[in-house]
Image 1 (cartoon, rainbow over the protein chains, first blue to last red):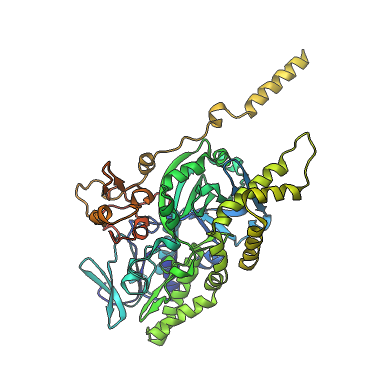
Image 2: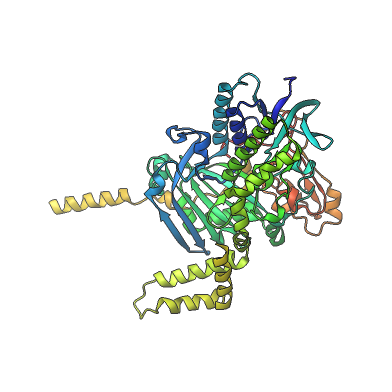
Length: 440
Length: 126
Protein backbone atom coordinates (compact mmCIF):
# COMPACT_ATOMS: atom_id res chain seq x y z
CA UNK A 1 0.00 0.00 0.00
CA UNK A 2 2.90 2.36 -0.68
CA UNK A 3 1.25 3.85 -3.66
CA UNK A 4 -0.97 6.87 -3.46
CA UNK A 5 -4.75 6.47 -3.59
CA UNK A 6 -7.09 8.64 -5.61
CA UNK A 7 -9.14 9.06 -2.48
CA UNK A 8 -9.24 8.09 1.18
CA UNK A 9 -12.68 7.94 2.76
CA UNK A 10 -12.88 8.19 6.54
CA UNK A 11 -15.88 6.33 7.95
CA UNK A 12 -17.81 3.36 6.53
CA UNK A 13 -21.29 4.50 7.50
CA UNK A 14 -23.98 5.23 4.93
CA UNK A 15 -22.20 8.33 3.53
CA UNK A 16 -18.79 6.69 3.30
CA UNK A 17 -20.18 3.51 1.76
CA UNK A 18 -22.22 5.46 -0.80
CA UNK A 19 -19.09 7.40 -1.73
CA UNK A 20 -17.04 4.19 -1.93
CA UNK A 21 -19.61 2.47 -4.13
CA UNK A 22 -19.61 5.45 -6.51
CA UNK A 23 -15.80 5.52 -6.62
CA UNK A 24 -15.60 1.76 -7.27
CA UNK A 25 -18.11 1.99 -10.13
CA UNK A 26 -16.01 4.78 -11.65
CA UNK A 27 -12.81 2.74 -11.46
CA UNK A 28 -11.14 4.83 -8.81
CA UNK A 29 -8.46 3.59 -6.46
CA UNK A 30 -9.48 4.26 -2.89
CA UNK A 31 -9.11 3.32 0.74
CA UNK A 32 -12.22 3.27 2.96
CA UNK A 33 -11.27 3.35 6.63
CA UNK A 34 -13.59 2.37 9.48
CA UNK A 35 -12.75 2.62 13.17
CA UNK A 36 -15.19 -0.10 14.22
CA UNK A 37 -14.69 -3.84 14.12
CA UNK A 38 -16.79 -3.92 10.93
CA UNK A 39 -18.83 -1.32 9.00
CA UNK A 40 -21.93 -0.50 11.04
CA UNK A 41 -20.51 -1.65 14.35
CA UNK A 42 -20.32 1.90 15.72
CA UNK A 43 -23.48 3.23 14.10
CA UNK A 44 -26.83 3.90 15.68
CA UNK A 45 -29.95 5.16 13.92
CA UNK A 46 -33.70 5.13 14.53
CA UNK A 47 -33.97 4.21 11.82
CA UNK A 48 -35.65 4.55 8.52
CA UNK A 49 -33.70 5.12 5.34
CA UNK A 50 -36.12 7.30 3.39
CA UNK A 51 -36.42 7.70 -0.36
CA UNK A 52 -35.24 5.56 -3.24
CA UNK A 53 -31.51 6.36 -3.53
CA UNK A 54 -30.63 2.93 -2.14
CA UNK A 55 -31.91 1.45 -5.41
CA UNK A 56 -29.28 3.56 -7.24
CA UNK A 57 -26.51 1.96 -5.19
CA UNK A 58 -27.91 -1.57 -5.07
CA UNK A 59 -30.39 -2.07 -7.91
CA UNK A 60 -33.25 -4.40 -6.99
CA UNK A 61 -32.05 -4.60 -3.39
CA UNK A 62 -35.59 -5.65 -2.44
CA UNK A 63 -35.08 -9.00 -4.11
CA UNK A 64 -32.59 -9.83 -1.37
CA UNK A 65 -33.65 -10.91 2.06
CA UNK A 66 -30.65 -9.26 3.69
CA UNK A 67 -29.46 -5.88 4.87
CA UNK A 68 -32.76 -4.08 5.30
CA UNK A 69 -35.56 -5.17 7.62
CA UNK A 70 -38.92 -3.92 6.37
CA UNK A 71 -40.35 -1.39 3.92
CA UNK A 72 -42.68 1.27 5.24
CA UNK A 73 -46.27 1.30 4.01
CA UNK A 74 -47.82 2.53 7.22
CA UNK A 75 -47.06 5.94 8.72
CA UNK A 76 -48.38 7.28 11.97
CA UNK A 77 -47.85 10.57 13.79
CA UNK A 78 -49.09 10.47 17.37
CA UNK A 79 -49.85 13.30 19.77
CA UNK A 80 -49.68 12.14 23.33
CA UNK A 81 -50.64 13.28 26.81
CA UNK A 82 -50.16 11.23 29.97
CA UNK A 83 -53.09 8.87 29.30
CA UNK A 84 -54.15 9.34 25.67
CA UNK A 85 -52.90 9.28 22.12
CA UNK A 86 -54.37 11.02 19.09
CA UNK A 87 -52.87 9.89 15.81
CA UNK A 88 -52.75 10.83 12.18
CA UNK A 89 -52.52 7.47 10.50
CA UNK A 90 -51.80 6.79 6.84
CA UNK A 91 -51.46 3.41 5.21
CA UNK A 92 -51.36 2.82 1.49
CA UNK A 93 -50.68 -0.03 -0.89
CA UNK A 94 -49.04 2.62 -3.10
CA UNK A 95 -46.11 2.23 -0.74
CA UNK A 96 -45.93 -1.51 -1.45
CA UNK A 97 -44.46 -0.76 -4.85
CA UNK A 98 -40.74 -0.79 -5.53
CA UNK A 99 -38.63 1.25 -5.26
CA UNK A 100 -39.91 1.62 -1.73
CA UNK A 101 -40.19 5.09 -0.22
CA UNK A 102 -38.55 4.00 3.00
CA UNK A 103 -36.94 0.95 4.55
CA UNK A 104 -36.30 0.21 8.22
CA UNK A 105 -32.72 -0.73 8.95
CA UNK A 106 -30.59 -1.82 11.87
CA UNK A 107 -27.19 -0.32 11.16
CA UNK A 108 -24.99 -3.12 12.46
CA UNK A 109 -26.62 -5.38 9.89
CA UNK A 110 -27.38 -2.89 7.11
CA UNK A 111 -23.97 -1.20 6.87
CA UNK A 112 -22.19 -4.53 6.91
CA UNK A 113 -24.39 -5.74 4.06
CA UNK A 114 -23.83 -2.54 2.09
CA UNK A 115 -20.06 -2.89 2.66
CA UNK A 116 -20.25 -6.39 1.12
CA UNK A 117 -21.90 -4.81 -1.93
CA UNK A 118 -19.12 -2.21 -2.10
CA UNK A 119 -16.55 -5.01 -1.90
CA UNK A 120 -18.27 -6.70 -4.86
CA UNK A 121 -18.06 -3.42 -6.79
CA UNK A 122 -14.36 -3.13 -5.91
CA UNK A 123 -13.77 -6.63 -7.24
CA UNK A 124 -15.43 -5.70 -10.51
CA UNK A 125 -13.39 -2.50 -10.83
CA UNK A 126 -9.95 -1.90 -12.36
CA UNK A 127 -8.52 -1.73 -8.85
CA UNK A 128 -9.83 -5.04 -7.53
CA UNK A 129 -6.52 -5.61 -5.71
CA UNK A 130 -5.70 -1.97 -4.92
CA UNK A 131 -8.85 -0.52 -3.37
CA UNK A 132 -9.62 -1.55 0.19
CA UNK A 133 -12.17 -1.44 2.95
CA UNK A 134 -10.07 -1.35 6.12
CA UNK A 135 -11.90 -1.77 9.43
CA UNK A 136 -10.45 -1.46 12.94
CA UNK A 137 -8.39 1.60 12.08
CA UNK A 138 -8.84 4.93 13.82
CA UNK A 139 -7.87 7.98 11.78
CA UNK A 140 -6.29 10.45 14.16
CA UNK A 141 -5.33 13.19 11.77
CA UNK A 142 -5.97 14.49 8.28
CA UNK A 143 -2.57 15.35 6.80
CA UNK A 144 -2.44 18.83 5.30
CA UNK A 145 0.33 20.30 3.18
CA UNK A 146 0.02 24.01 2.50
CA UNK A 147 -3.68 23.74 3.32
CA UNK A 148 -4.22 20.84 0.93
CA UNK A 149 -5.36 17.44 2.23
CA UNK A 150 -2.80 14.83 1.20
CA UNK A 151 -3.69 11.84 3.33
CA UNK A 152 -4.34 10.62 6.84
CA UNK A 153 -2.44 9.42 9.87
CA UNK A 154 -3.31 6.51 12.15
CA UNK A 155 -0.84 5.94 14.97
CA UNK A 156 2.59 6.09 13.34
CA UNK A 157 1.29 5.08 9.95
CA UNK A 158 0.48 7.48 7.16
CA UNK A 159 -1.56 6.88 4.02
CA UNK A 160 -1.50 9.28 1.11
CA UNK A 161 -4.11 10.25 -1.46
CA UNK A 162 -5.05 13.00 -3.90
CA UNK A 163 -8.22 13.60 -1.93
CA UNK A 164 -9.90 12.86 1.39
CA UNK A 165 -13.63 12.45 2.01
CA UNK A 166 -14.56 12.85 5.65
CA UNK A 167 -17.67 10.81 6.49
CA UNK A 168 -16.98 10.40 10.19
CA UNK A 169 -20.46 11.05 11.52
CA UNK A 170 -21.94 13.69 13.81
CA UNK A 171 -19.10 13.63 16.34
CA UNK A 172 -16.94 15.21 13.69
CA UNK A 173 -13.53 15.50 15.31
CA UNK A 174 -11.60 15.58 12.01
CA UNK A 175 -13.93 18.20 10.56
CA UNK A 176 -13.04 20.31 13.59
CA UNK A 177 -9.36 19.52 13.20
CA UNK A 178 -9.26 20.80 9.61
CA UNK A 179 -11.04 23.95 10.74
CA UNK A 180 -14.40 23.49 9.02
CA UNK A 181 -16.32 23.15 12.29
CA UNK A 182 -15.81 25.00 15.59
CA UNK A 183 -13.69 23.16 18.17
CA UNK A 184 -16.58 23.28 20.61
CA UNK A 185 -20.12 22.82 19.32
CA UNK A 186 -22.64 23.93 21.97
CA UNK A 187 -25.65 21.81 22.93
CA UNK A 188 -28.16 24.34 21.57
CA UNK A 189 -29.13 22.57 18.36
CA UNK A 190 -27.97 19.08 19.18
CA UNK A 191 -30.12 16.20 20.36
CA UNK A 192 -29.36 13.00 22.20
CA UNK A 193 -31.00 9.92 20.75
CA UNK A 194 -31.67 6.96 23.01
CA UNK A 195 -33.12 3.66 21.92
CA UNK A 196 -33.99 0.10 22.80
CA UNK A 197 -34.40 -2.79 20.40
CA UNK A 198 -37.19 -5.01 21.72
CA UNK A 199 -37.54 -8.47 20.30
CA UNK A 200 -40.72 -10.49 19.70
CA UNK A 201 -41.74 -13.70 18.03
CA UNK A 202 -42.12 -12.62 14.43
CA UNK A 203 -45.77 -13.78 14.39
CA UNK A 204 -46.57 -11.71 17.46
CA UNK A 205 -44.96 -8.65 15.92
CA UNK A 206 -46.73 -9.10 12.59
CA UNK A 207 -50.12 -9.63 14.20
CA UNK A 208 -49.74 -6.78 16.64
CA UNK A 209 -48.70 -4.21 14.05
CA UNK A 210 -50.71 -5.64 11.12
CA UNK A 211 -47.62 -6.40 9.07
CA UNK A 212 -47.55 -8.77 6.12
CA UNK A 213 -44.50 -10.14 4.40
CA UNK A 214 -41.90 -7.41 4.61
CA UNK A 215 -44.22 -4.45 5.22
CA UNK A 216 -43.51 -2.24 8.20
CA UNK A 217 -44.73 0.72 10.21
CA UNK A 218 -43.15 3.93 11.39
CA UNK A 219 -44.65 5.87 14.26
CA UNK A 220 -43.44 9.24 15.56
CA UNK A 221 -44.62 10.73 18.85
CA UNK A 222 -44.91 14.28 20.14
CA UNK A 223 -45.84 15.41 23.65
CA UNK A 224 -45.75 13.31 26.82
CA UNK A 225 -43.22 10.97 25.15
CA UNK A 226 -40.37 13.30 26.13
CA UNK A 227 -41.68 14.23 29.58
CA UNK A 228 -41.53 17.98 29.08
CA UNK A 229 -38.22 18.06 27.22
CA UNK A 230 -38.19 19.26 23.62
CA UNK A 231 -37.90 16.46 21.08
CA UNK A 232 -39.98 13.44 20.20
CA UNK A 233 -40.32 9.69 20.22
CA UNK A 234 -40.26 6.99 17.57
CA UNK A 235 -41.18 3.37 17.05
CA UNK A 236 -40.21 1.39 13.95
CA UNK A 237 -40.92 -2.24 13.19
CA UNK A 238 -37.91 -4.36 12.27
CA UNK A 239 -38.10 -7.95 11.06
CA UNK A 240 -38.71 -9.49 14.49
CA UNK A 241 -38.19 -6.52 16.78
CA UNK A 242 -39.15 -2.90 17.25
CA UNK A 243 -36.78 0.03 17.60
CA UNK A 244 -38.26 2.37 20.18
CA UNK A 245 -36.65 5.53 21.38
CA UNK A 246 -36.48 9.25 21.88
CA UNK A 247 -34.59 12.23 20.59
CA UNK A 248 -34.11 14.83 23.29
CA UNK A 249 -32.94 18.43 22.93
CA UNK A 250 -29.65 18.41 24.78
CA UNK A 251 -29.76 22.00 26.00
CA UNK A 252 -33.31 21.52 27.26
CA UNK A 253 -32.36 18.23 28.92
CA UNK A 254 -29.52 20.01 30.71
CA UNK A 255 -31.79 22.85 31.83
CA UNK A 256 -34.60 20.55 32.99
CA UNK A 257 -32.22 18.28 34.89
CA UNK A 258 -33.61 15.04 33.51
CA UNK A 259 -32.02 11.66 32.86
CA UNK A 260 -32.63 10.26 29.35
CA UNK A 261 -33.10 6.61 30.45
CA UNK A 262 -35.72 7.70 33.01
CA UNK A 263 -37.63 9.54 30.29
CA UNK A 264 -37.43 6.44 28.09
CA UNK A 265 -38.93 4.34 30.87
CA UNK A 266 -41.71 6.89 31.38
CA UNK A 267 -42.42 6.70 27.65
CA UNK A 268 -42.49 2.88 27.76
CA UNK A 269 -44.94 2.95 30.67
CA UNK A 270 -47.44 5.09 28.76
CA UNK A 271 -50.56 2.92 28.34
CA UNK A 272 -50.54 3.14 24.52
CA UNK A 273 -46.85 2.24 24.33
CA UNK A 274 -47.15 -0.49 26.97
CA UNK A 275 -49.83 -2.09 24.78
CA UNK A 276 -47.44 -2.11 21.83
CA UNK A 277 -44.39 -3.58 23.54
CA UNK A 278 -45.67 -5.97 26.22
CA UNK A 279 -44.23 -9.44 26.06
CA UNK A 280 -41.12 -8.27 24.24
CA UNK A 281 -37.53 -8.72 25.36
CA UNK A 282 -35.05 -5.86 25.30
CA UNK A 283 -31.98 -7.02 23.39
CA UNK A 284 -30.04 -3.77 23.05
CA UNK A 285 -29.86 -0.35 24.64
CA UNK A 286 -28.04 2.34 22.70
CA UNK A 287 -27.59 6.09 22.46
CA UNK A 288 -26.09 8.58 20.06
CA UNK A 289 -25.97 12.30 19.47
CA UNK A 290 -28.18 13.48 16.57
CA UNK A 291 -28.17 16.73 14.60
CA UNK A 292 -31.41 18.71 14.65
CA UNK A 293 -31.41 20.09 11.12
CA UNK A 294 -30.90 23.60 12.44
CA UNK A 295 -28.55 25.32 9.98
CA UNK A 296 -26.94 27.33 12.75
CA UNK A 297 -24.67 24.45 13.72
CA UNK A 298 -23.85 23.21 10.23
CA UNK A 299 -20.36 23.85 8.89
CA UNK A 300 -20.64 26.78 6.46
CA UNK A 301 -18.11 25.29 4.12
CA UNK A 302 -17.99 21.58 3.30
CA UNK A 303 -14.77 21.53 1.32
CA UNK A 304 -11.14 22.46 1.33
CA UNK A 305 -8.33 21.92 -1.10
CA UNK A 306 -8.48 18.14 -1.73
CA UNK A 307 -11.10 17.53 0.94
CA UNK A 308 -14.87 17.07 1.23
CA UNK A 309 -17.20 16.60 4.21
CA UNK A 310 -20.37 14.55 3.82
CA UNK A 311 -23.13 12.85 5.78
CA UNK A 312 -23.74 13.79 9.37
CA UNK A 313 -20.17 15.02 9.73
CA UNK A 314 -21.68 17.98 7.86
CA UNK A 315 -24.74 17.80 10.18
CA UNK A 316 -26.87 16.78 7.21
CA UNK A 317 -29.92 15.54 9.06
CA UNK A 318 -33.35 17.03 9.48
CA UNK A 319 -36.61 16.42 11.21
CA UNK A 320 -39.17 18.84 9.82
CA UNK A 321 -42.12 17.00 11.33
CA UNK A 322 -42.73 14.55 8.52
CA UNK A 323 -39.81 12.20 9.04
CA UNK A 324 -36.34 12.09 10.53
CA UNK A 325 -34.13 12.21 7.44
CA UNK A 326 -30.43 11.59 7.87
CA UNK A 327 -29.35 8.37 6.24
CA UNK A 328 -30.80 9.41 2.87
CA UNK A 329 -28.97 12.75 3.10
CA UNK A 330 -25.81 10.80 3.95
CA UNK A 331 -26.28 8.58 0.92
CA UNK A 332 -26.91 11.41 -1.53
CA UNK A 333 -24.08 13.58 -0.18
CA UNK A 334 -21.70 10.60 -0.33
CA UNK A 335 -22.65 9.98 -3.96
CA UNK A 336 -22.19 13.66 -4.89
CA UNK A 337 -18.86 13.84 -3.04
CA UNK A 338 -17.53 10.82 -4.92
CA UNK A 339 -18.78 12.18 -8.26
CA UNK A 340 -16.91 15.41 -7.54
CA UNK A 341 -13.73 13.42 -6.88
CA UNK A 342 -14.21 11.47 -10.13
CA UNK A 343 -14.47 14.75 -12.07
CA UNK A 344 -11.47 16.15 -10.24
CA UNK A 345 -9.39 13.17 -11.25
CA UNK A 346 -10.37 13.57 -14.88
CA UNK A 347 -9.40 17.23 -14.71
CA UNK A 348 -6.27 16.34 -12.70
CA UNK A 349 -7.23 19.13 -10.36
CA UNK A 350 -8.31 18.57 -6.76
CA UNK A 351 -8.06 22.26 -5.88
CA UNK A 352 -10.49 24.21 -3.77
CA UNK A 353 -12.41 25.58 -6.76
CA UNK A 354 -12.96 22.05 -8.04
CA UNK A 355 -14.03 20.80 -4.59
CA UNK A 356 -16.49 23.66 -4.34
CA UNK A 357 -18.57 21.95 -7.04
CA UNK A 358 -19.55 19.42 -4.36
CA UNK A 359 -21.18 22.08 -2.24
CA UNK A 360 -22.83 23.67 -5.29
CA UNK A 361 -24.27 20.35 -6.42
CA UNK A 362 -25.42 19.58 -2.89
CA UNK A 363 -27.06 23.03 -2.68
CA UNK A 364 -28.99 22.23 -5.87
CA UNK A 365 -30.03 18.78 -4.64
CA UNK A 366 -33.09 17.99 -2.54
CA UNK A 367 -30.86 17.69 0.53
CA UNK A 368 -29.93 21.35 0.92
CA UNK A 369 -33.11 22.58 -0.77
CA UNK A 370 -35.15 20.83 1.92
CA UNK A 371 -32.86 21.91 4.72
CA UNK A 372 -33.06 25.52 3.52
CA UNK A 373 -36.81 25.45 2.87
CA UNK A 374 -37.82 23.84 6.15
CA UNK A 375 -35.77 25.79 8.69
CA UNK A 376 -38.97 27.37 10.04
CA UNK A 377 -40.44 23.89 10.54
CA UNK A 378 -37.32 22.78 12.42
CA UNK A 379 -37.63 25.79 14.74
CA UNK A 380 -41.36 25.22 15.17
CA UNK A 381 -40.81 21.59 16.17
CA UNK A 382 -38.60 22.72 19.01
CA UNK A 383 -41.14 25.30 20.19
CA UNK A 384 -42.66 24.24 23.54
CA UNK A 385 -46.12 25.26 22.28
CA UNK A 386 -45.79 22.60 19.61
CA UNK A 387 -44.10 19.90 21.69
CA UNK A 388 -46.11 20.29 24.91
CA UNK A 389 -49.24 22.40 24.73
CA UNK A 390 -50.55 21.18 21.37
CA UNK A 391 -50.40 17.44 22.19
CA UNK A 392 -52.21 18.09 25.49
CA UNK A 393 -54.84 20.19 23.73
CA UNK A 394 -55.39 17.64 20.96
CA UNK A 395 -55.65 14.71 23.39
CA UNK A 396 -58.00 16.65 25.67
CA UNK A 397 -60.25 17.39 22.69
CA UNK A 398 -60.04 13.76 21.56
CA UNK A 399 -61.09 12.49 24.96
CA UNK A 400 -64.16 14.76 24.96
CA UNK A 401 -65.04 14.13 21.34
CA UNK A 402 -64.83 10.35 21.56
CA UNK A 403 -66.54 10.08 24.98
CA UNK A 404 -70.14 9.09 24.53
CA UNK A 405 -72.14 9.97 27.63
CA UNK A 406 -75.86 9.51 28.13
CA UNK A 407 -76.35 13.24 28.33
CA UNK A 408 -76.67 16.03 25.78
CA UNK A 409 -73.54 16.27 23.62
CA UNK A 410 -71.75 19.53 22.89
CA UNK A 411 -70.87 20.49 19.36
CA UNK A 412 -67.27 19.67 18.47
CA UNK A 413 -66.57 23.37 18.06
CA UNK A 414 -67.52 24.08 21.66
CA UNK A 415 -65.49 21.11 22.90
CA UNK A 416 -62.50 22.33 20.93
CA UNK A 417 -62.89 25.82 22.36
CA UNK A 418 -62.82 24.44 25.88
CA UNK A 419 -59.67 22.42 25.17
CA UNK A 420 -58.04 25.51 23.68
CA UNK A 421 -58.84 27.57 26.77
CA UNK A 422 -57.59 24.83 29.09
CA UNK A 423 -54.22 24.25 27.43
CA UNK A 424 -53.49 27.29 25.29
CA UNK A 425 -55.32 30.27 23.82
CA UNK A 426 -56.80 31.15 20.43
CA UNK A 427 -54.10 33.78 20.00
CA UNK A 428 -51.35 31.24 20.61
CA UNK A 429 -53.08 28.82 18.25
CA UNK A 430 -53.36 31.47 15.55
CA UNK A 431 -49.68 32.27 15.87
CA UNK A 432 -48.85 28.58 15.65
CA UNK A 433 -51.17 28.14 12.66
CA UNK A 434 -49.56 31.09 10.93
CA UNK A 435 -46.04 29.80 11.63
CA UNK A 436 -47.10 26.29 10.68
CA UNK A 437 -48.68 27.27 7.37
CA UNK A 438 -45.50 29.13 6.39
CA UNK A 439 -43.20 26.42 7.69
CA UNK A 440 -44.73 23.42 5.98
CA UNK B 1 -77.63 -30.85 25.65
CA UNK B 2 -76.33 -29.58 22.36
CA UNK B 3 -76.89 -26.02 23.54
CA UNK B 4 -74.80 -26.68 26.63
CA UNK B 5 -72.06 -28.19 24.46
CA UNK B 6 -72.02 -25.31 22.05
CA UNK B 7 -71.90 -22.75 24.84
CA UNK B 8 -69.06 -24.70 26.45
CA UNK B 9 -67.29 -24.59 23.14
CA UNK B 10 -67.87 -20.84 22.99
CA UNK B 11 -66.41 -20.46 26.47
CA UNK B 12 -63.32 -22.41 25.45
CA UNK B 13 -62.89 -20.28 22.36
CA UNK B 14 -63.22 -17.14 24.43
CA UNK B 15 -60.54 -18.28 26.80
CA UNK B 16 -58.24 -18.87 23.88
CA UNK B 17 -58.98 -15.50 22.39
CA UNK B 18 -58.51 -13.64 25.65
CA UNK B 19 -54.86 -12.85 26.22
CA UNK B 20 -53.15 -14.67 28.99
CA UNK B 21 -52.93 -12.81 32.24
CA UNK B 22 -49.18 -12.31 32.24
CA UNK B 23 -49.32 -10.66 28.84
CA UNK B 24 -51.53 -7.94 30.28
CA UNK B 25 -48.90 -7.00 32.79
CA UNK B 26 -46.83 -4.06 31.63
CA UNK B 27 -43.45 -5.04 30.31
CA UNK B 28 -40.79 -4.99 32.96
CA UNK B 29 -38.67 -1.88 32.70
CA UNK B 30 -34.93 -2.32 32.79
CA UNK B 31 -32.64 -0.46 35.14
CA UNK B 32 -29.67 1.29 33.57
CA UNK B 33 -27.17 -1.38 34.74
CA UNK B 34 -29.41 -4.01 33.11
CA UNK B 35 -29.56 -1.93 29.90
CA UNK B 36 -25.78 -1.51 29.87
CA UNK B 37 -25.43 -5.22 30.55
CA UNK B 38 -26.75 -5.79 27.02
CA UNK B 39 -23.99 -3.70 25.43
CA UNK B 40 -20.99 -5.44 23.79
CA UNK B 41 -17.92 -3.51 24.90
CA UNK B 42 -14.58 -3.89 23.17
CA UNK B 43 -11.36 -5.20 24.71
CA UNK B 44 -13.10 -6.45 27.82
CA UNK B 45 -10.42 -9.05 28.43
CA UNK B 46 -7.80 -6.34 28.77
CA UNK B 47 -7.18 -5.14 32.31
CA UNK B 48 -5.58 -1.87 31.25
CA UNK B 49 -7.37 0.25 28.68
CA UNK B 50 -6.57 3.68 27.34
CA UNK B 51 -9.47 6.03 28.22
CA UNK B 52 -10.81 7.87 25.16
CA UNK B 53 -12.41 10.55 27.28
CA UNK B 54 -10.47 12.56 29.83
CA UNK B 55 -12.41 14.72 32.25
CA UNK B 56 -10.88 17.48 34.29
CA UNK B 57 -13.16 16.98 37.30
CA UNK B 58 -11.45 19.88 39.06
CA UNK B 59 -13.42 22.10 36.69
CA UNK B 60 -16.67 20.20 37.44
CA UNK B 61 -16.06 20.49 41.14
CA UNK B 62 -15.03 24.14 41.24
CA UNK B 63 -16.72 26.34 38.65
CA UNK B 64 -19.44 24.29 36.95
CA UNK B 65 -22.90 25.57 37.91
CA UNK B 66 -24.91 22.55 36.69
CA UNK B 67 -22.73 19.39 36.71
CA UNK B 68 -25.07 18.24 33.96
CA UNK B 69 -22.99 15.28 32.81
CA UNK B 70 -24.08 13.47 35.97
CA UNK B 71 -27.62 13.29 34.60
CA UNK B 72 -27.51 13.77 30.80
CA UNK B 73 -25.02 10.96 30.10
CA UNK B 74 -27.09 8.00 28.82
CA UNK B 75 -24.60 5.53 30.35
CA UNK B 76 -24.17 7.39 33.66
CA UNK B 77 -20.38 7.47 33.32
CA UNK B 78 -20.46 10.61 35.41
CA UNK B 79 -21.60 10.29 39.00
CA UNK B 80 -21.93 12.64 41.94
CA UNK B 81 -20.96 11.50 45.42
CA UNK B 82 -22.57 12.55 48.69
CA UNK B 83 -20.30 15.57 48.94
CA UNK B 84 -21.50 16.71 45.52
CA UNK B 85 -18.17 15.85 43.84
CA UNK B 86 -18.23 14.65 40.22
CA UNK B 87 -16.46 11.41 39.30
CA UNK B 88 -15.94 9.90 35.86
CA UNK B 89 -15.35 6.35 34.61
CA UNK B 90 -14.93 5.45 30.94
CA UNK B 91 -15.73 1.70 31.15
CA UNK B 92 -19.49 2.08 30.55
CA UNK B 93 -19.13 4.70 27.78
CA UNK B 94 -21.17 3.89 24.66
CA UNK B 95 -19.49 6.61 22.54
CA UNK B 96 -22.67 8.62 22.05
CA UNK B 97 -20.98 12.01 22.27
CA UNK B 98 -23.52 13.65 24.60
CA UNK B 99 -20.98 14.92 27.16
CA UNK B 100 -18.86 16.55 24.45
CA UNK B 101 -21.73 18.97 23.71
CA UNK B 102 -23.39 19.10 27.13
CA UNK B 103 -20.25 20.24 28.97
CA UNK B 104 -19.92 23.96 28.32
CA UNK B 105 -17.10 24.38 30.86
CA UNK B 106 -14.28 22.83 28.85
CA UNK B 107 -13.84 19.89 31.22
CA UNK B 108 -14.37 17.10 28.68
CA UNK B 109 -11.67 16.03 26.20
CA UNK B 110 -13.36 13.59 23.87
CA UNK B 111 -11.76 11.26 21.35
CA UNK B 112 -12.75 7.98 19.74
CA UNK B 113 -11.47 4.87 21.49
CA UNK B 114 -8.42 3.13 20.08
CA UNK B 115 -9.54 -0.14 18.44
CA UNK B 116 -6.75 -2.11 20.12
CA UNK B 117 -6.28 -0.59 23.55
CA UNK B 118 -9.43 1.47 24.07
CA UNK B 119 -12.94 0.65 25.28
CA UNK B 120 -16.04 1.65 23.34
CA UNK B 121 -18.74 -0.42 21.70
CA UNK B 122 -19.60 -2.87 18.97
CA UNK B 123 -23.34 -2.64 18.40
CA UNK B 124 -25.20 -5.87 17.71
CA UNK B 125 -28.23 -4.09 16.24
CA UNK B 126 -27.50 -0.36 16.04
